[in-house]
Length: 147
Image 1 (cartoon, rainbow, N blue to C red):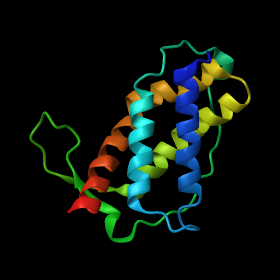
Image 2: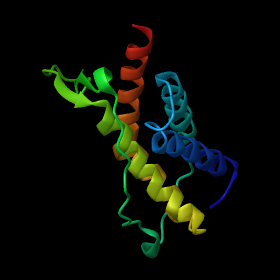
Image 3: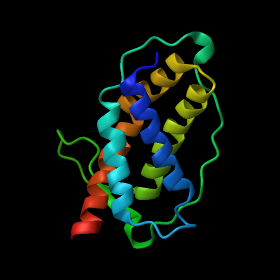
């Protein structure tokens, strides 16, 4: 499955992963990361529903880069906004690298022409995992930049 929405998302994943892979080597700003996350999240909303073939399920072991957000790394979060809960400590690094790992798996499949597997990997993990990390990171980055 390859269409303009999938291609746009793929290009967004490449930009995001490149930003993370070069985070400590370059003088990137939090604004760049926020912009990339917003682009990634908004494009994920338009990924089509697909049924993966069994042989396209990704079990790749992804190597994640080391990044440091210093004073912005630790923050408070409530996991379920519909229940009154005590906030828990969370990590921007964990959010950013979980997103990285999930989208990087799809990149590997996409670049092996396993388009259905890539889209399935991206879409399912967006809905059950990295989408929540992205929302949390977007909120934290917004606070860090504009407080």
